[in-house]
Image 1 (tube, one colour):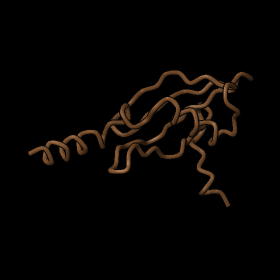
Image 2 (spheres, one colour):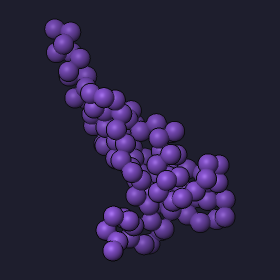
Image 3 (tube, one colour):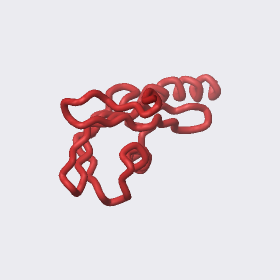
Image 4 (cartoon, one colour):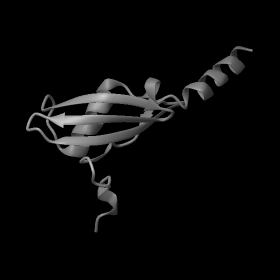
Length: 99
């Protein structure tokens, strides 16, 4: 019975970005995606929508970005995707698709 409850708990948490995506993970993914040093930006307007977390980044120089990450809980713990960011009004930039 305990095994069944544990498995059901994992299934329920697997779709919750609010549980999987910590503030620290969000900051690390944002810093990497935008090439920003810690403390040079502010994260606001965080919205957890199923497995996706959407948020706004404003840099200390006044630039603004709309970003998102996907997050879930697996058997090894929280898994958070790389951040995808774009300036308002521009399409999201995916460096893997650039040639």
